[in-house]
Length: 442
Image (cartoon, rainbow, N blue to C red; front, side, top):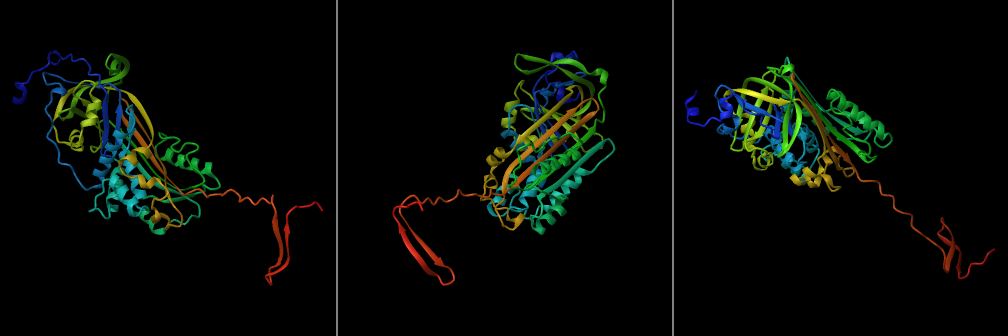
């Protein structure tokens, strides 16, 4: 036993190799995707090292990592965690990569204060006057496939037919985001346009994300929908045996117990720790993707972890160097789906101007009419089983203009004494002039 473990108390349950499953709410994340997917869920996780090692909850904090500042990836990570805290406190799954890339495409067409606010939310500081190559680097890196691991990432602009988007805007998104423009007709064929967007998303996510844009979400005032879709499927380096999956208890809240199918395996895994939380990484084939499960050290303490965790803590739990440990792992099979409208969260993070008619997206259309964000829709799905993990997400930013105002007709009601004149338009002469005090029937 290493010297630093000799003087630390070992729980009797660990000494006896019989530590009961730690049934706690957890956080999970997939790394290698720019903090690609983040999830909060009330599912069980059991972790107990064997052979006299210490329980994970007794592990000292892992040496913290210095934050990697001023990079688009860092900005995506920060955005994801900040949005995570703004959304529902129930089960939740989102993709910072998908949301961030969609916002970055909108930012390319924003100007003035509108652009400044979006860049603030993306954590792009003043030194990043041209972050375009950084976005393309992220996209190309995420798309790299290896045996046992599939990744698909696609961007697309669905624009109003014959609208006349600025060529420099569409060229910029084509070059740096690999986002071609596809014309649809919101004004004359709204439902067909909606179905086309959803069909494209389904194709890019292997049918995991359906109906991203629900009925009624689009109006004839729509001009552009910016869409990102991402799909990941990774096989565990060391898969679970199906015959080891058992129906076992989980405690989602104090005093409440449910039964779930829990996968069980003893193996060597990398674990990391902060003062309040611990994590375990399940590596996927290919060596550059991992699925992480984060537990509070205090039972049922996930809310406190989410409240107190810093970006530096999160980087430590996901990326810090740490030695592998011998672990008895219990993890449930599960599927999690989440659908969110992100308007409120993004506004509260600092970009309210983009959602009102005075927004400046003249970099998209030259300012020929007002453009602003109508809605930011996001869907994400995660499936974990004995073979591996599969996840998908999609984001749609719907840009619209103001409704054409139809004023009520001006009323000209002749129901009182009046003058009447007959004129000649050519000579501007008055041919006849009269007053009618009491109209009489002819």
